[in-house]
Amino acid sequence: MDAIDNLLNRVSIPRLEGPAPSADQLDILFRAALRAPDHGALRPWRFLTIQGDALYKLGQLYVQAALQDEPGLAAEKRTKLENMPLRAPLLIVAIAALQEHFKVPGSEQLIAAGCAVQNMLLAAHAQGLGAMWRTGDMAYNATVKKGLGLSEHEQIIGFIYLGAPAKGKPVPQLEVSNFVTEWN
Image 1 (cartoon, rainbow, N blue to C red):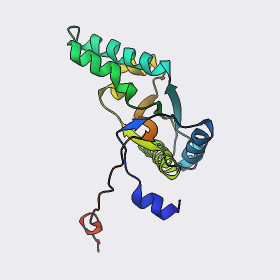
Image 2: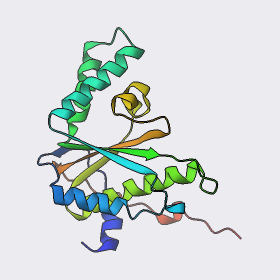
Image 3: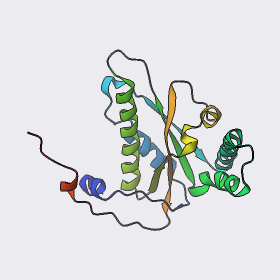
């Protein structure tokens, strides 16, 4: 796929199915992530892959986290939380691993981690994979962070859902002039 075509036509795909990306496809995603702009070459990111039975385990972690905040959790909300990770055959937890640095503030490191995820999304699209970057309450929940093994200086910046597109999604046509002005 042509690079410009990839940039202009990538779109989030919320409906995903199997198969999960292959090991070779994942390797390309992670290699693309490593090419993100990164002031100070700190590589302020890391990734967890979750698939198979671990998706069910993640759903249970979501329920455990919700029960701490809401002990009387309704059955339908519990079911929704259990099923959230099952929206795709593979999840990547994108983690910003912020570091103390005299020249590179945390905000720049967070942006670099976001760029790494964007590169992964572009690499997925280029390979014909469907992908969706999601956050939500569980991305910011201390119990989930602990359950996934994050340290104090790390934060979840997204759950990247990956698989085969179950259904195509049209690319919205946006007017560039609505987003760009000249300053003088």
